[in-house]
Image (cartoon, rainbow, N blue to C red; front, side, top):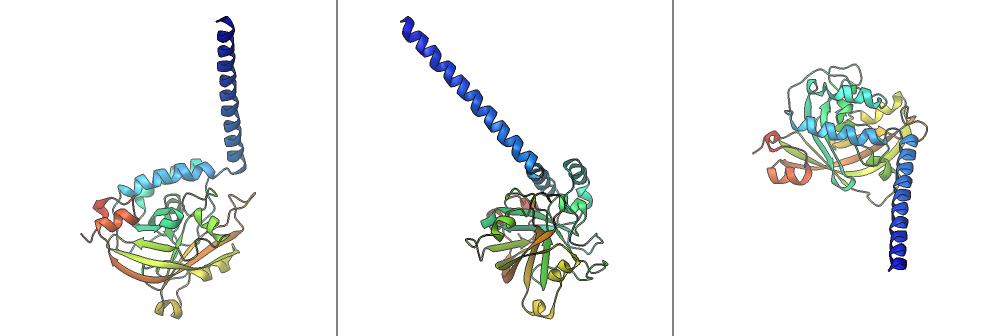
Length: 265
């Protein structure tokens, strides 16, 4: 009995040591990931807060003034947290969803630091000093910008994984203004230099006026440029069609959208 008891104790002690080793290894790997990619955890915390805030807001359709452009670099977590606390001042326009990539974000008017800390933003405005054009769902070149947190999961980060592969070519992109759902099919992707010339990809043209498209843009994140990306990802899709937004459709495509924001009931 004594021998068996001793062996049992040794086994338990060995298992306890193994458990401690596994825990320490996991913690070390997590610490290394966060050290190498400092924005990895920002995306998860940031989008959690963004989803909650958007769900308690109201979609607006009237013309407003906002800050426009391609958007600034990713702010620090402390700055991002402060920005999200004033997001209620921004104008919620609707939601964007790319089910095959796991993307679902609220859409805000403009690309101010507050708007991009809380979801996707529209980079063009009729009265701004940028392109002096509007971003209208289902019309011409509807453009959206959002941050890339380099985690392949939050905001527009999944676009970076898609840019290097072909397995998801032709994925569907959906946007809604609370009244209708507008569907697009992805047709091309590019990595471009992050310069003023990047804005040319956002312009409305006579071609897009006749054959509407959507343009999604985000930073191309690569070390050590997590906070100051030198390149941008461009995803484009052709307009497929539109239909009235129903509760059933909203549940399928826009899980974070509360029923009270559906206007076509």
